Length: 388
Ligand SMILES: *Cc1c(COP(=O)(O)O)cnc(C)c1O
Image 1 (cartoon, rainbow, N blue to C red):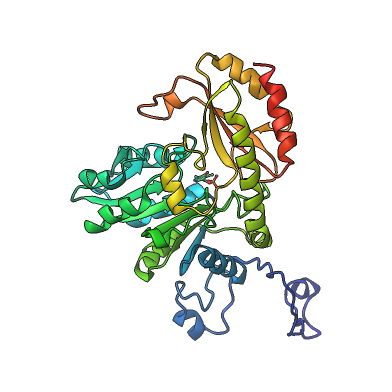
Image 2 (tube, rainbow, N blue to C red):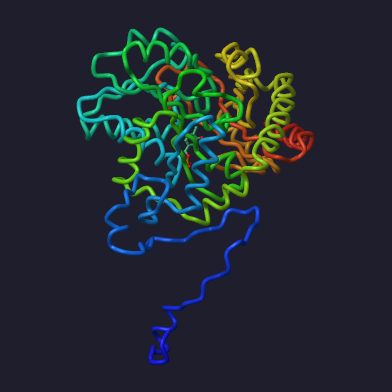
């Protein structure tokens, strides 16, 4: 700065550059909308899709590129794009691969906002969305039409927890050049190797285990294929899916402990699920590691673990008012959506409103087993049974 620079300008322009060579474990948090170019030529020559350089905060910073690379590695993928929520990651996939006149197949137990989005695309955007039995397996071949472009899968499906036969669905899809996307949130990419099973596009709600703190909303789409990633990048750019640097940092900070947390959730959930199986008030425990969960054999074949999320069906003799009282009596389990954090949660669902042919009479309750001592959680459930 020259001596003539006004005080006001000096508040904005400064010459100090911190010394190079700083090294530490945490990824630096880069806040930026504007990214600077050293001259016009470098501005003109830079391509926003080239991840060896920077163009605009929306397209990435060292913080978000680092998170993308680490998430791709976890899934054994090559490319990753971040989105501001799990649901927006789902939307990125739909907008990248579907256009008017196309057909998309969706499992009947899909995460409900995915269904809501698909129904909107069907109603207002000329895309056909059809729902299939999540246990259909290779039978999906009969549903594929010439205009079918994409098959969504979710393993296990939300709330009712059926485990689909992903390799069979991928085989049938690929025989007809249809893409398969997997919502792999439940396994966090730890307990299911999606690309090994043939999946083309993996979606994650980082809001869950990757964050682990019940404090971040973020999603990711991961691929191994450059051409697929290119189409996703266009959708990502056109939809303006930026994520915050601070949120990216929070996820990066949680990743080193993710597997340890996941295994702790898994062990506690299986202990509690086994205890719940012995309770006379419970008709069925919908946990993929238990034989009574539809698709259990597929979980055994394809998965190396389970998360902390499962559902229970009460005996049909209990009314909704009674099971609501059970939920209201819980002390450690809080009532709330989302999962993957340290706190145990539960949500009662009215399945008749969510599924086309729901066969069960009893009330359903979804449990997220947090990181509390599982014996304390069993104690909490036991005292709530007394309120039934
Ligand atoms: C939570 C969740 C999502 C969406 O994540 P958000 O960040 O809440 O939008 C998608 N799929 C599954 C299976 C989920 O549980």
